[in-house]
Image 1 (cartoon, one colour):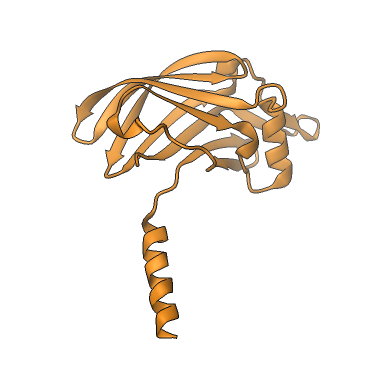
Image 2 (cartoon, rainbow, N blue to C red; image 1 turned 30 degrees about the horizontal axis):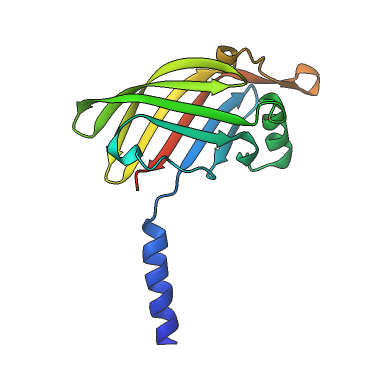
Length: 164
């Protein structure tokens, strides 16, 4: 029993401290908020060196907690025709201790938009937040129940990237 507890403690310590990559999209409707998370992507091996980087995110890997929201999300982004979101970072400019900015090119549904993204480095983790709009990519925000539920145009993107 002591061995089991020791092994459990060691595994929990190792796994509990490991930061996984995740890309989260938070949106709002006139009724509620929804959150879609993708944890199934890797950062380029050079990301830890803060050089040019590209992240490819598969739209079908997003999970919005509820199947009907996940299905609508994938349909809105035309996952069958455009299965990936690509985010390419330019050179990183150091702003202050632990913070950087980078021009990021986001490709979604064959449309490319550029954003200046602020990134924060905390140990092995890089985090960022960016506001985008459906309309930036020519997407009409969805409506449900005959227009009674309307998704707002603005989305918040968050990501955590493990540099290792």
